[in-house]
Length: 193
Image (cartoon, rainbow, N blue to C red; front, side, top):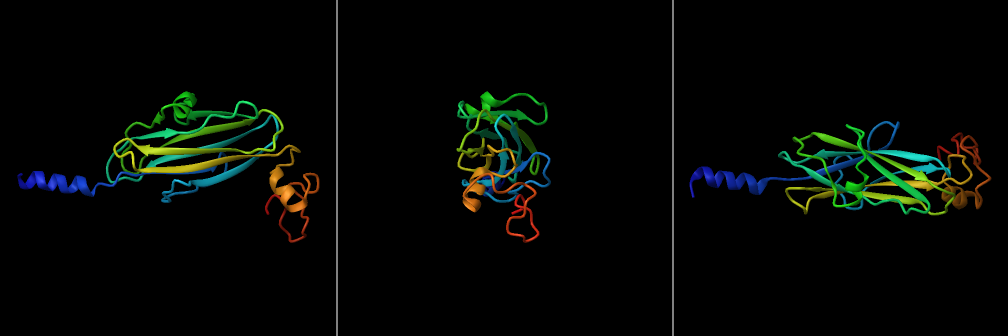
Protein backbone atom coordinates (compact mmCIF):
# COMPACT_ATOMS: atom_id res chain seq x y z
CA UNK A 1 0.00 0.00 0.00
CA UNK A 2 1.44 3.37 -1.02
CA UNK A 3 1.58 6.41 1.29
CA UNK A 4 -1.13 8.12 -0.83
CA UNK A 5 -3.46 5.12 -0.49
CA UNK A 6 -2.86 4.92 3.26
CA UNK A 7 -3.60 8.63 3.58
CA UNK A 8 -6.79 8.22 1.59
CA UNK A 9 -7.94 5.34 3.80
CA UNK A 10 -7.13 7.37 6.92
CA UNK A 11 -9.24 10.30 5.70
CA UNK A 12 -12.16 7.96 4.90
CA UNK A 13 -11.97 6.39 8.34
CA UNK A 14 -12.22 9.83 9.95
CA UNK A 15 -15.16 10.85 7.75
CA UNK A 16 -18.27 11.86 9.63
CA UNK A 17 -21.54 11.61 7.74
CA UNK A 18 -24.43 13.26 9.58
CA UNK A 19 -27.81 14.72 8.66
CA UNK A 20 -29.10 17.56 10.84
CA UNK A 21 -32.88 18.01 10.80
CA UNK A 22 -34.48 21.22 12.00
CA UNK A 23 -38.18 22.03 12.42
CA UNK A 24 -40.39 25.10 12.83
CA UNK A 25 -43.96 26.23 12.36
CA UNK A 26 -44.36 27.96 9.03
CA UNK A 27 -44.26 31.69 9.55
CA UNK A 28 -42.50 31.31 12.91
CA UNK A 29 -38.94 32.56 13.29
CA UNK A 30 -35.95 30.29 13.61
CA UNK A 31 -35.74 26.55 13.19
CA UNK A 32 -35.30 24.36 16.27
CA UNK A 33 -32.77 21.58 16.61
CA UNK A 34 -29.62 22.81 14.90
CA UNK A 35 -26.69 20.64 15.92
CA UNK A 36 -28.88 18.32 18.01
CA UNK A 37 -28.60 14.77 16.70
CA UNK A 38 -31.21 12.54 18.28
CA UNK A 39 -33.50 9.72 17.25
CA UNK A 40 -36.05 11.16 19.70
CA UNK A 41 -36.20 14.33 17.65
CA UNK A 42 -36.67 18.01 18.33
CA UNK A 43 -40.35 18.89 18.43
CA UNK A 44 -42.73 21.69 17.52
CA UNK A 45 -46.46 21.72 18.26
CA UNK A 46 -49.33 23.65 16.73
CA UNK A 47 -53.03 23.55 17.59
CA UNK A 48 -55.46 22.78 14.76
CA UNK A 49 -59.23 23.33 14.70
CA UNK A 50 -61.42 20.85 12.78
CA UNK A 51 -61.32 21.61 9.05
CA UNK A 52 -58.14 23.69 9.44
CA UNK A 53 -54.50 22.87 8.89
CA UNK A 54 -51.11 23.37 10.51
CA UNK A 55 -48.04 23.92 8.36
CA UNK A 56 -44.52 23.02 9.41
CA UNK A 57 -41.13 23.41 7.73
CA UNK A 58 -38.41 20.79 8.06
CA UNK A 59 -34.85 21.57 6.95
CA UNK A 60 -32.43 18.75 6.21
CA UNK A 61 -28.88 20.09 6.54
CA UNK A 62 -25.67 18.26 5.72
CA UNK A 63 -23.63 18.43 8.92
CA UNK A 64 -21.10 16.01 7.47
CA UNK A 65 -17.47 16.61 6.65
CA UNK A 66 -18.14 15.65 3.00
CA UNK A 67 -20.93 15.96 0.45
CA UNK A 68 -23.72 13.50 1.19
CA UNK A 69 -27.34 12.81 0.33
CA UNK A 70 -30.17 11.86 2.65
CA UNK A 71 -33.40 9.89 2.54
CA UNK A 72 -36.28 11.45 4.47
CA UNK A 73 -39.11 9.26 5.73
CA UNK A 74 -42.26 10.10 7.64
CA UNK A 75 -45.76 8.77 8.34
CA UNK A 76 -48.97 9.33 6.46
CA UNK A 77 -52.03 10.71 8.22
CA UNK A 78 -54.42 8.28 9.87
CA UNK A 79 -57.04 8.89 7.15
CA UNK A 80 -59.92 9.26 9.60
CA UNK A 81 -58.89 12.33 11.61
CA UNK A 82 -55.78 13.72 9.92
CA UNK A 83 -54.54 14.22 6.36
CA UNK A 84 -50.82 14.79 5.77
CA UNK A 85 -49.11 16.24 2.70
CA UNK A 86 -45.37 16.66 2.18
CA UNK A 87 -43.95 18.92 -0.53
CA UNK A 88 -40.48 19.94 -1.67
CA UNK A 89 -40.21 23.56 -0.51
CA UNK A 90 -37.94 24.39 -3.47
CA UNK A 91 -40.12 23.09 -6.32
CA UNK A 92 -43.50 22.80 -4.50
CA UNK A 93 -43.72 19.25 -5.89
CA UNK A 94 -45.87 16.84 -3.86
CA UNK A 95 -43.47 14.25 -2.41
CA UNK A 96 -45.94 12.56 -0.03
CA UNK A 97 -45.69 9.14 -1.71
CA UNK A 98 -41.89 9.19 -1.51
CA UNK A 99 -41.71 10.39 2.13
CA UNK A 100 -44.32 7.87 3.33
CA UNK A 101 -42.82 5.12 1.15
CA UNK A 102 -39.15 4.25 0.62
CA UNK A 103 -38.01 7.81 1.36
CA UNK A 104 -37.60 11.17 -0.36
CA UNK A 105 -34.02 11.71 -1.59
CA UNK A 106 -32.55 15.17 -0.98
CA UNK A 107 -29.94 14.64 -3.66
CA UNK A 108 -26.31 15.29 -2.86
CA UNK A 109 -25.78 18.27 -0.55
CA UNK A 110 -22.46 20.02 -0.01
CA UNK A 111 -21.21 20.42 3.55
CA UNK A 112 -23.55 22.89 5.31
CA UNK A 113 -26.10 22.90 2.46
CA UNK A 114 -29.75 22.07 3.10
CA UNK A 115 -33.11 21.23 1.52
CA UNK A 116 -36.53 21.95 2.99
CA UNK A 117 -39.79 20.08 3.15
CA UNK A 118 -43.15 21.70 3.74
CA UNK A 119 -45.52 19.60 5.82
CA UNK A 120 -49.25 20.36 5.93
CA UNK A 121 -51.38 18.53 8.51
CA UNK A 122 -55.13 18.95 8.05
CA UNK A 123 -57.69 18.09 10.73
CA UNK A 124 -60.53 16.25 8.96
CA UNK A 125 -62.89 16.28 11.95
CA UNK A 126 -63.01 16.85 15.69
CA UNK A 127 -60.64 14.49 17.46
CA UNK A 128 -59.05 14.08 20.87
CA UNK A 129 -55.95 12.42 19.42
CA UNK A 130 -52.97 14.52 18.28
CA UNK A 131 -51.17 13.70 15.05
CA UNK A 132 -47.47 13.20 15.79
CA UNK A 133 -45.25 13.08 12.73
CA UNK A 134 -41.69 11.90 13.24
CA UNK A 135 -39.54 12.62 10.19
CA UNK A 136 -36.19 10.86 9.95
CA UNK A 137 -33.27 11.75 7.69
CA UNK A 138 -30.78 8.97 6.99
CA UNK A 139 -27.38 9.40 5.33
CA UNK A 140 -27.22 7.60 1.97
CA UNK A 141 -23.50 6.98 2.60
CA UNK A 142 -23.78 5.64 6.16
CA UNK A 143 -27.27 4.38 7.08
CA UNK A 144 -26.34 4.36 10.78
CA UNK A 145 -26.23 8.18 10.74
CA UNK A 146 -29.72 9.61 11.28
CA UNK A 147 -31.53 12.55 12.82
CA UNK A 148 -35.22 13.05 13.55
CA UNK A 149 -37.70 15.84 14.20
CA UNK A 150 -41.26 15.70 15.49
CA UNK A 151 -44.12 17.87 14.23
CA UNK A 152 -47.24 17.58 16.40
CA UNK A 153 -50.69 18.79 15.41
CA UNK A 154 -52.70 19.21 18.62
CA UNK A 155 -56.52 19.10 18.42
CA UNK A 156 -58.26 22.40 19.09
CA UNK A 157 -61.91 21.39 18.78
CA UNK A 158 -63.25 24.67 20.21
CA UNK A 159 -61.15 26.75 17.78
CA UNK A 160 -59.60 29.12 20.37
CA UNK A 161 -55.97 28.34 19.28
CA UNK A 162 -55.24 26.58 22.58
CA UNK A 163 -54.59 22.83 22.46
CA UNK A 164 -57.53 20.99 24.05
CA UNK A 165 -55.18 18.71 26.02
CA UNK A 166 -53.58 21.76 27.69
CA UNK A 167 -56.98 23.31 28.48
CA UNK A 168 -58.18 20.06 30.07
CA UNK A 169 -54.96 19.72 32.10
CA UNK A 170 -55.07 23.32 33.33
CA UNK A 171 -58.82 23.98 33.65
CA UNK A 172 -60.49 20.57 33.42
CA UNK A 173 -62.51 21.92 30.47
CA UNK A 174 -61.98 23.48 27.05
CA UNK A 175 -64.35 26.44 27.46
CA UNK A 176 -62.59 28.23 30.35
CA UNK A 177 -59.59 29.80 28.58
CA UNK A 178 -59.02 31.58 25.27
CA UNK A 179 -55.93 32.78 23.48
CA UNK A 180 -56.26 36.26 25.02
CA UNK A 181 -57.47 35.35 28.53
CA UNK A 182 -55.12 35.47 31.52
CA UNK A 183 -56.75 33.06 33.96
CA UNK A 184 -53.95 33.20 36.56
CA UNK A 185 -53.52 37.01 36.16
CA UNK A 186 -49.75 36.85 35.77
CA UNK A 187 -49.68 39.22 32.79
CA UNK A 188 -49.07 36.38 30.32
CA UNK A 189 -51.95 35.30 28.08
CA UNK A 190 -53.14 31.71 28.33
CA UNK A 191 -51.83 31.19 24.79
CA UNK A 192 -48.42 32.47 25.95
CA UNK A 193 -48.41 30.06 28.89
